[in-house]
Length: 391
Image (tube, rainbow, N blue to C red; front, side):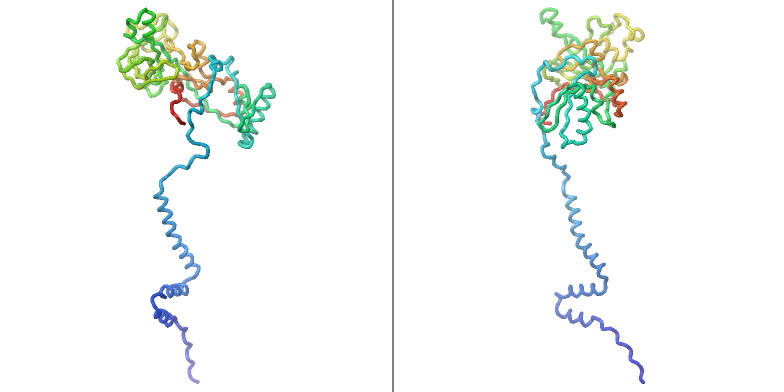
């Protein structure tokens, strides 16, 4: 015995690579691919290849998102700009109530119930209460083209129609006597009889919002002298400097107004045109109470709050479509029962709230209806007609 020869090592692929490399450069990528597949795990190579393939597409998608402008989604079918002409309809004057219903809360309520297919849960919750009310009162209703129905009820039926857990928001702003009748000094001279001259001088002034105070409630609780207000003056004024005086016959006080700036024209359908102006308030030098009254007996006019002064000189600013003058009863009937005196500042009442009564509010709370309060002073713009062609 001779020595045992060692085993030959496995043949390495150099000879094969040389032979393949000698066939041409076109086979180099294939040779490199075979080398990777032989010396690296196959699953890891596939995952890396997928990531390499996805990377260019992800980068291109991100680049396209950065370049694309942000656009709002298109409106649903059938919803777009509405012409205001679609909201015009004939309403006879005989159907417009000029006085509130007595007692408060006895007004009518028109309930629209949608079809069950459109709102099944709402219809099931509310329809039962409406049907019970109709059956108990002998009311009626009518079918609508949409498949729903319109039910004629009373406002006192509201608690039975709201589901438990409903939430009502009440505007506790209070209306002040914002409308005064003034005389334009220097106007109407030589117009004829004294009555004609007085008619030419008569100007209606509607206080809109204070310019010297941030909050109407704060301005109305402060003395009048020196305050600057934005007001509607129904007179064809073109420049500043006009002076007006507010002194109704038999009033216990008077007030002077000076137009410091004409801001814009005021055009109201069916009413006398005027301007929106900035007016400065002051008291005449000889202003004193003619007949002492409780608010005037303890305070001089220079210290009297503007709300109390307007309560002597002004009147409740009723909507112009009522076509009547304000009465003392309107001071209470044109206020909501939940209006707060410290939140005075509206020139128009939140009309939907005029129908609520204290017993109705108690019934709503007993049925589990929640409520919140806020202060949103209503301006005279609510009386203006809509002039935009579309909505």
